[in-house]
Every structure is written in C-alpha cells, then in structure tokens.
Image (cartoon, rainbow, N blue to C red; front, side):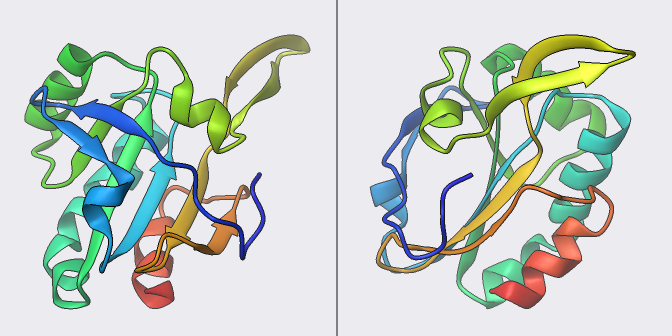
Length: 150
C-alpha cells in the first residue's frame, strides 16, 4: 500500500463507457480511488452501490469516486447496468494502476495462494497527494467512512 503524503501515481484508464480518465483530469477535486477484486460479487457490489447512493453527497463536497478493478470495460458496463451504479468504474486489465498503487498481492483462499487485488481505498487531495490510505477495507462501511474523510 502506498503511504499517506506521497504523490499519487498518474493513470489513464477507460471507464464503463470506454471514456478515458486520467488522474490529472481531477486536479482541484478530492478523489476517492478505490480498488476492488471483481464486478458483481457480493462485497464489491455492496461497496459500489454504497458509493452510488452517496454520489450526491460526494458531489456537494467537490469529490469524485472512482472504482478500479481488472475487469473489462464490457464487464463494468454490465455491472453498472445490473446494479444501477452512478459512479465511474475504471477498467485496468493490464494492472497498470493496480500495480502502481500497490494493491496486487498474494491472497489465499482455502489454503491456495493466488495473485489478486486487495480491496484498498485511497483519498487523493486537490493537488494529487494521497491523504488517506486503507487496505483493511470493510465493503459495507467504506462509502460512508470515505464521505467523512473528504
């Protein structure tokens, strides 16, 4: 996980509609950048729906929420439509941002080791510096907690 106080790595990723997003596009706003393992899974759905329900509150605080996973643009579009998401979700199949933000780690399920995304949330300030970092994210609580952080 990256440390608080460091400059957030730049990225250029497509959203669920195929539109390119760069971190620099959001200078002057706070960015809640959250990394999640997989579209349409229970925890990831809960987190994305939670952020969507609070989108107006984040807008009032001049903050944007960006979710990132390695799923495809098409998968993200299906996820958005199925869960009626109001937030931007970015596709990173080549793991560029996922690795830059140090969230690609060895995980274990039933004793079997594999590489995957560790659910992690960063808050980036208006100048592009990380002001909050958490890799012990509870999917259900994260959206409300991040609203408090911004």
